[in-house]
Image (cartoon, rainbow, N blue to C red; front, side):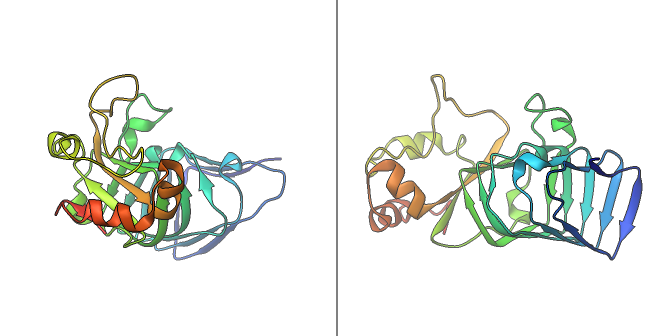
Length: 204
């Protein structure tokens, strides 16, 4: 039987999500306030439906890959730790069921390792991003002309303004893990760092 946390408010508790061979559902209509949530399951076994996380600490004990559910979550005043690849935060209508309910505000990602993670429809000034070897491009679309007017190392492209991989309009920031990007793009961490240091809107 799957595990469901829904239709209630939980405050000040330690939740360890570690069920083997079962799906864990957070939401709908769930509020977690000042809780510590320790996630020991892969992304495929954690289903996040509209849920409010308020002043929570979320610790990922294994890399969370391509998890769509965060866009259904409202994260306010939370601290996230651990490794994430290809995850999205904030409102992203149409991306997945409940994507219009997303929110990310006053959150601290400084102890997380984020790669190819996107932040949508949010005020990035309220967020703390991880430092180098992660780097975060703020307002990639708004700064797109500046970003595409210079040469980048290897095959790295910080933003795509047209074509099949064109950025979605809601994109407010993207965070990338330099060692992984260096391998993908056929360059080095040093070359990437030198390239991003040209721009004051890239946090590293």
